[in-house]
Image 1 (cartoon, rainbow, N blue to C red):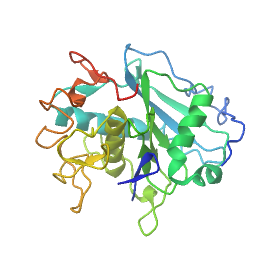
Image 2 (cartoon, rainbow, N blue to C red):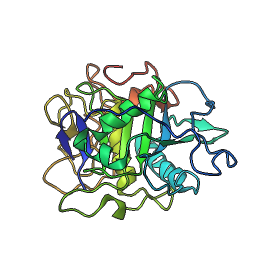
Image 3 (tube, helix red, strand yellow):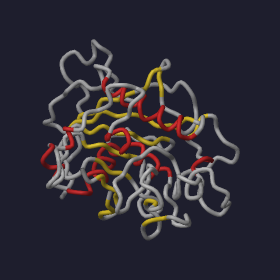
Length: 279
């Protein structure tokens, strides 16, 4: 992963008037496809899931056929296992992930032309459409083209609420992002799910610049172990842990440095819950 501009990107223009597809595809209303955030099962800071298409994007129905729900189960359960119990508080409706379908007003080509800033543009469009709640983070499955496979905010340099996967993205001299399938099992996260975990943790504030193994000016990733989900370095990334050694961003003892084990987005809510930097 590399830091480009202000948004963290996963390696593997003038804004036009915004238009959101209020009707969706034929049959949306009949099948009760959520086009807005449904009433929350619980209160508090939480992560909401979006399935987003550009205006001319092909709707693969990933929010309807269980594909995204399985992917969400894979990355949320991985975090719970590696964190030793605490879970990220997921936005649910009647016990199931609340997944909102959004069709944007810009074409895929227009959004892809923004390059590594596509994440910023997605957040801008979603905010203008009234779809961003100040208490939530948005795990966004963008089914369109991009020059990377994903991107996230990197606070405090860039404070944001949208972390995104680009399901049809491409990286020069690499396999197309779409060749990495979404998880087929809730027990086995793949490249996209592990990338989204990284994105969510970045959005929450990892890795703070005060961490002893931080790799980057002001805080980006860690460089001590390729087993760390937040690792970037010379060795192949093989994520199997959250904060190897528990000394950088999760479960450490440095009270002057951000610890995501105290995040306000965890369930159960820890004592002294912390918001992401800049919120």
